[in-house]
Length: 260
Ligand SMILES: C[S@@+](CC[C@H](N)C(=O)[O-])C[C@H]1O[C@@H](n2cnc3c(N)ncnc32)[C@H](O)[C@@H]1O
Image (tube, rainbow, N blue to C red; front, side, top):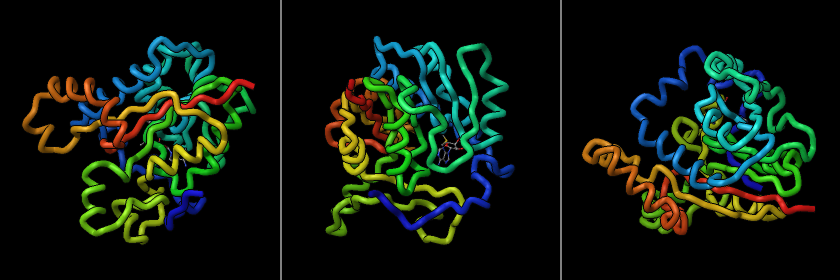
């Protein structure tokens, strides 16, 4: 199964609980990425309706209101108390509930109870995503679906970098940023080879029913010189064709668990 060198000791604070770090601020200046992700969710979930959805690693609930458009109820799960408290302040109404994730790699739900599980911008923090993928399979009801975002190590620019070094994109997770030097021991940050993640779902019998390449033009040069409307038009036209070559930094896949 997928593995990397970084681990998160249980006694270390979750990065998203850290006072020095504000995940809400991370989104300032990232309207293009946010809109691209909303577009991808709408494209993949179009005309679908679920009873019970889970926003796993949902953070402060950036995407939860969008998910509620496709589900009668949404459970927002996150290991960070700080993020859950922020979410509780801004999300109201009976359709959303909040659950703290207490155990690493655990999806806090009963077997076969969830109709849609959404996991966006969380694979980044899973050096070994195998146990979480098993958990997703466990909690999905037969016929249920999982919308998974993969932090893509195999994106186009990276592929050129690997090629220049006569190397293939690794099958296992690749530590990134401060984690790449193996010194940082807090919440890990990794990228994945999408083929490895797809294979892990396929081995459990989950079928891919949709795939998009997302935030394809997030490079600062594009964002500085091209109006966002134009970038989003490109995104609308190219998310699907670009997914065929795993082009972008973020790959969104909708998986379906077989009916019994
Ligand atoms: C980058 S944020 C993404 C939040 C939300 N999904 C979004 O797209 O805005 C990552 C979230 O994953 C949570 N997280 C970190 N490690 C996790 C893990 N091992 N399992 C589940 N969630 C995790 C963090 O607390 C944080 O809220």
